[in-house]
Length: 197
Image 1 (cartoon, rainbow, N blue to C red):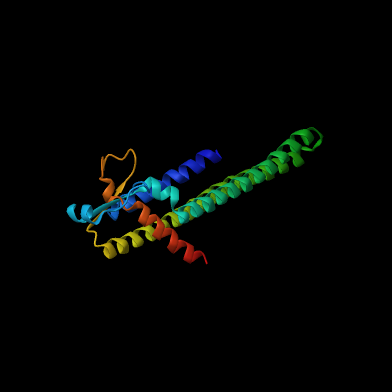
Image 2: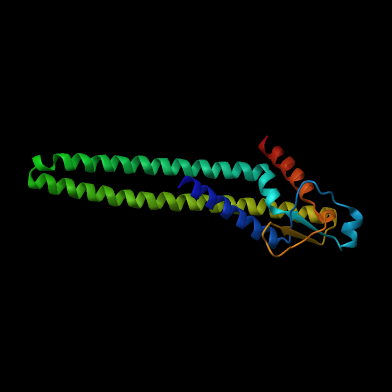
């Protein structure tokens, strides 16, 4: 379940990034490429960023993913501990029910039923809270990348920044000379390193 949650978190973050970068008309490729001013000028100031590479190499995204993964693990652990405690109480009740009076059994069963309902509510609330935190982190990440790329494009004189992702049929090919991924990642990581200090 942890692997599935982590995969879903990464997939969701990837989709948010894809949408955000597409909304900003951004595109991403590998670090091997270099931007040629002549190629960019000839293409009408259109460049792209490789989204897969950005997600793999942007330190902020790595830290964010780790924070969310840690929160997810902590929430799962907390829910698991509470669930085990209720299960122990049920097992203890089942062992002792034959020695209890009818009133004691009824009272214990009502208490266990309430605890079970409380646990289900807690579990749902914990999941909703985690999802809210994931959403907030995704929005923060989107805004950070979006704001950076807008300024980056303005500074470089680019008219259009596309996003490229393997398996995404929107962009089938981009001249490596139009790939600004390495420069964008370097500048994003530099800015993030300054923020962390």
